[in-house]
Structures are given as structure tokens and as C-alpha cells.
Amino acid sequence: MGIFDKFKGKAEDLKDKASDLVDGHGDKVGEGLDKAGDFVDEKTGGKYGDKIDGGVDKAKDGLDNLDGQNDDIPDGPKPA
Image: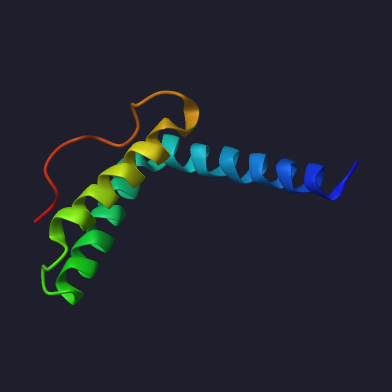
């Protein structure tokens, strides 16, 4: 077993843990990503709002699809 096989195994373990987290707490993960995006948007003075929103959406989609299904992070408006 080479060093890259060990890294691949660790990466799979991390993916499984992240998938389990999103499966159980998708709504909270989505809220956290929205809050992080809002924070960055505020710190940049709204200059990159569209790019930040796009990045948040891609992060949500990527995390939501870890298990091959798009069913854990609810779509909808960001919290106020």
C-alpha cells in the first residue's frame, strides 16, 4: 500500500463524515453557509455580492450532492 492509497482512504473517510453531517443537519449547514456569505459580503462592502452568492450556491450544491442526492440542504430564500 503506497502513500497515495492512504491519502485516498482518508479522503473517502472525510467525505463520508461530511455526507453524514449534511444528511443529518442540512438545514443548519445551509444556514451557516448563508451567514458566512453574508459576512464576507458585508466585509467587502457588497462589491462582490453576486460572486459570493454564486459561491455559496455552489458550496451548497456540492455538499448536498455528496450522497448522490440533492435532498438535504433546502432551497429557498436566505435568512434575513
